[in-house]
Image (cartoon, rainbow, N blue to C red; front, side):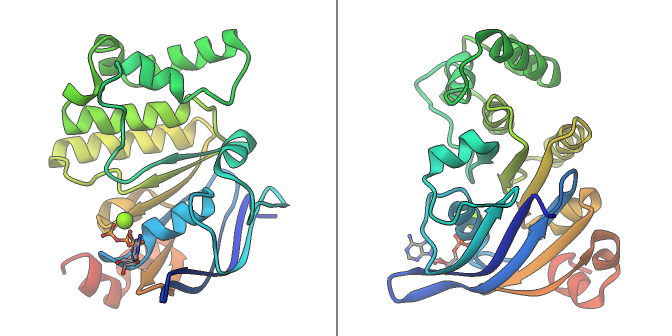
Length: 236
Ligand SMILES: Nc1ncnc2c1ncn2[C@@H]1O[C@H](COP(=O)(O)OP(=O)(O)OP(=O)(O)O)[C@@H](O)[C@H]1O
Ligand SMILES: [Mg+2]
């Protein structure tokens, strides 16, 4: 059984249908990439899966449970975390306050403390800057904070929306290394990216999205060799 199963999903904004019937699945332990150009519908899919948007039709199942109509906070408490596009951190709160907010669905204080220490280990910069206001962090540091905040909920699966956006090449590599570590630590990953090369290099499988439809899917290694993927997404 897949951990996350999306079936025949359709999503509209008023009269405009952004997602036109897509199906995909993520199995436990996988890193799955969803790649596509601007406006393809990547963010819309993540917002619908995490309960921020309602679908017009279709089904979303998480660990066998139908979550299609569930509210976002309920979905978080089931074990799904979302790192939003543009790394929305709370600019006027400190790094530590942002991290603590990520644990809002959890109760056990000791477990929360353990997760915080784990995050500080993975992101030493966040510990160094724990008292700094999040709005004054660099873009790459804000991306780390957004990831750390999502990890504070101790998710089974983490959904990331364009983690490399606007980052310098060195930082992009660092962020993708961290995604690999998160995966190695046992968290399942669904990552949405325009940086297809990087995303395919760390993913097990990928889906290619064009104007609300999945046009290709398969093993990431094979997609890296696929001529139409190379032409449209890898700049080759
Ligand atoms: N709130 C909204 N109201 C109306 N249309 C919307 C809204 N949000 C998104 N859309 C439209 O839905 C389509 C898919 O948008 P979406 O943000 O999901 O794309 P994306 O793949 O995430 O693109 P990008 O790579 O630029 O982030 C686009 O045509 C967009 O204009
Ligand atoms: Mg987007």
